[in-house]
Image (cartoon, rainbow, N blue to C red):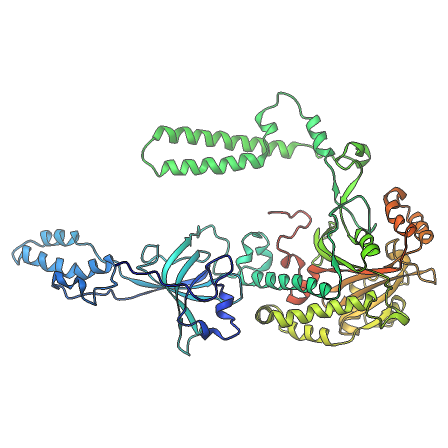
Length: 628
């Protein structure tokens, strides 16, 4: 009668038989609730060790009838063979006798297989669901590896077993005793970038496809995901509708930054100029040749491991040499090729894909505004792009932004400051909501980042959640900064110039020691669409400045007057054709409206305590860096 498979219990995932480690290690009922359950777990090995043990042996001359005895049940063929080795050695002694030569005795004994000492593997695995690791104990008799070979860091395993309680003096109080190994994903140990030695974050950026396996980056990713969910929770709770705005746009919404142009004309130009009858080195890309080299190198290695078919090996080596020579020709061609920039003025955009100059969007608030003027309060969440070559720890080329637009809403300054629907109040509430949500929903990850990155991060988030924020005008900010006698700012401070990161840092970190909101900026330092104040010099714009980070939220009340907006477009010397559709919103049913943008990546930076935004973005794109 065949033995039945043990029933897998626990709380497996909806679309998998696997139980996450978070379910086991961070259960609301405590870890002990799952002790004794049979579960399937999977993950990647963080560390491993092997402990040798004495093999199980039976009496050397046991009868053949003992195969049914209780002590024989459950033993593997290897264990039974090892238990019979003393019998083999006794037979050799009888056959050889005392008169036999030592050489004969040694030769016969060499025929007896030497037992491989059994061992136990202790693996620390993590599946990315939490910061903690689970210890998995695997007997060498069920491990799909040779005895004595430790499963190296990075190996992926899927194992079925029973959860056991450990003694109180152990670091962990629960472990998995593996009964069956369902999958092993091996690792090329000499090429695997994540060794036991902890790599610094800047080195990890070179392996963006591998770095999520580190405890640090996986914790950051879970915090980022939680902030993402909190964003939708907040706006859905207060009646905002989620609107997807385009990534490609023909309208410049900012006017202060370099943009990525989207065009197919350069490809057409290169094809038209391509000469006829050129060599392989002129038409084949270096990437294609490198891929061929890798493939052909694999064929050569496979043929080398086989003693047969030597002629095929010679042909494969010659083919590989020719491909390597082709790669060298292409590299030489690329180095000698003059760099010729195609001027946008020389291109006919009527022949382009969109029929006009188009760009990756810097901001989606224009398009969001059109929906706000139809259905009320709306928000969007997506990537925004700036082709700024400046190297900065707070900026990369592609950053995610939360943008909000509210109809029938003003900025929230002066008499309107206490109204819940105003932009400044909404921005402050949203920011505090995110801080509190992280503290309530990521306690284990926050403990980890507090221990490894910034011990004060939890306290700072709590303080920013409960404190009230000072609101000062740009003019008041300038007066405060001018009264700082013992601090020399690199940029000379005078009214009408933008506040630098250094200025903002002093206000938030040193003067107020908490987030501060600055409003009523000079009109020259803000976009043309921001509503002009009554003084004619300032506009209804604001910034939420946070200690250690700087500006996290920027917002404004947008100009609702057709005549004023039309004049501002002329003042900024902008193409009227680009903004005709935007002016239409003022021609047909205009309304006062305001909104703001939160730089989501900087919010993740704030909640993790890190200092470089490239470490909190899954695949950062910065000047000269797009390696995956």
